[in-house]
Length: 265
Image 1 (cartoon, rainbow, N blue to C red):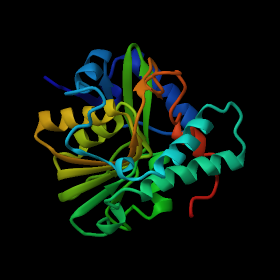
Image 2: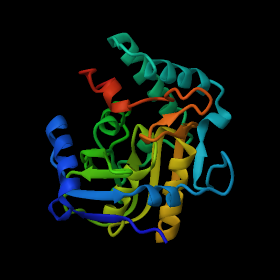
Image 3: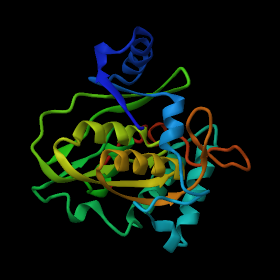
C-alpha cells in the first residue's frame, strides 16, 4: 500500500520542523505543509516492472530526437564543473529549454483553456515555465517547493496554495524529476480539484517516473508524463547520477540557473 503522509507544517515532529526551518531561512520561503517520504516508501514508489523500462504513462522525447544527446552532455558537463561562470549557466539553461521544446506535447497549447490549471513550483519550474511561455495567464499557481533531507528520506516543503476552482486537468511543469516526490506532493494537494494531471520536465530518472506512475495508479488518478530525456540512478542524496562513473547527470537545476537574473527569453 502506498500512503503519503502530508501534514500542516506545525503538526510535524520537532526534528522535522527544525530541518525545514533551516531551508525556510536559507531560501527565504515559508512552508504551509510538509510531506514525509521515508526511505522504505521511496523504494515502494520506485518499484518498476523492468530494468530501465519506463511506465506506460511516460513519453520520452529523446527516443525520437538525436539532438537530445548533445543537450544532456552539456547538462552533465556543467553539473560536474566546480566553478560556474555566467556562460556555463546560460548554456545549461539553454539545453534545458531545448529539451522542453522537443516534447511532443507543449503546455502552451492548452494552458490558456479555462478548464486547465497550470502549476510550476519554485525555483526552476517557475523560471523555465515563464521563459518558455508554458504558464497560463490566469489559471496558474507558482508555489515554493523544496526537498529537505531528513533521517533516511525526504521531506517536501510546500508554500500555501490558495483556494482553487475545479479543473479538468492540471499541467505540472518542473525542471527535472529525481525522486518524483515534489510533484507527488503537489498532486496530493490538488487532486480534490483536478480530474487528471500532465507532467512536463526536461529530464527524469526512470525511478522518478515510476514513483509518479505508482502513486497515481494507487490513487486512481489519471496521469501522463512528457520528459525530454530519462537516465541515471539515484544516489544516497537522491540526486541522479551516472551508474558507471558516479558523476551527476544534471545536478541541482535551481542552484545552476537561479543566479541568472533575467527571466524573459
